[in-house]
Length: 109
Image (tube, rainbow, N blue to C red; front, side, top):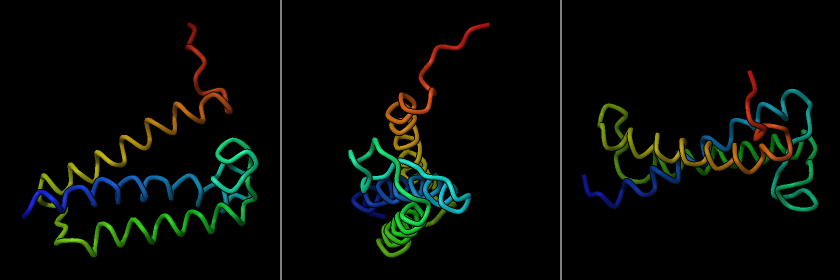
């Protein structure tokens, strides 16, 4: 498989990972940060907005992973590209949103 198909898998993994917190927060009826809040990415959006944003991310992730190339979860390079996208977005959002939700405080024993 050409290596050019791996880039959409990385981005697809990022979109799929981003769908999770928005869908879960929205389904729980809780507000959550989104690009549509004021200020964008810092303020809170309604649970309805988060469900819509989560499904949009899910659809884009699906298109990037399942409609570009021939993604095979048993192919190590495909799975690694998908996992890398998920990992990088998870790490980035943990750092960005941790400052709003107390997740960046040092642990104390």
